[in-house]
Length: 156
Image (cartoon, rainbow, N blue to C red; front, top):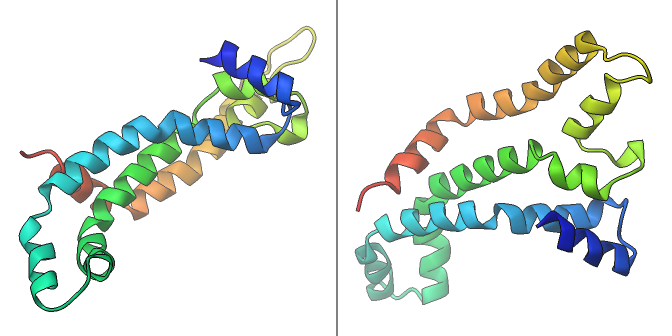
């Protein structure tokens, strides 16, 4: 995937920019999000939407006021897992970015701990701990939603 994307971004003049990388990460995480959300939406009873339609709601109102609130744990779980997948990616960032100001966290960690003759493992270890803190806090605060979202879409 990296080779053809590199050629396309190079021909379009988008190398060394964070915005095409965002689009690449969206496409990269789309399959896992689609898989999780499909399983989750299949578990939502159709009776909820039908009851809202019987009460006089349109399909859009039923979606917005009935289905989406029930689906929030699944959407939150898909968002968290997609974020973690994109946050930890190294291959796309090292292939498309050159300027240190545009580096993603894993790429910055690698460049932080290297010099011409030596690798500073203490700097790399400290940076890994610091970069892991946002993901760990996100998972701690959203633990209940993640677990409910993963378990709700798993039964058929």
